[in-house]
Length: 185
Image 1 (cartoon, rainbow, N blue to C red):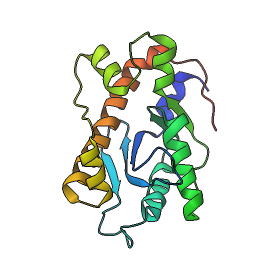
Image 2: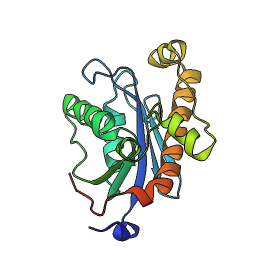
Image 3: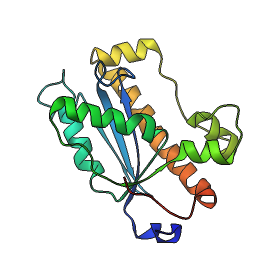
């Protein structure tokens, strides 16, 4: 499939925020999905529709439903972290995982086409676009979010929403550097 055919796809950028890097010990606090050139939807563990705020099963189910609406998923480190984390949490919770999608993991474009001192999203966005709104989470914020404190979950959710917006910015900037074919996995 050639790059020029991407305009026929329903595309979304996505990111998740977790309590741990290990998906057996950690769980999802939130996931943000931004329709390409459209709105962002954030699914949070403290949502009033979640029947069990101590479990991320509802978040996983809703995330899978939302991501399944799109043909191509774009993200930053989604191949090595976000997608495997979501798939693991789906398996642990007995939920179907997201199926095969076309995907663009922009960290690979950054590593393969540029030589920045760091390939963190914030650094790349700032060096190319000369601005970033990306925030830092601290242990205090993370532990408060794990305890379910609203102010901390608000911060974490906003952090995730900034990530998907800045990922979309870089997706647009990186288009000339993409290869000629997409692979569906």
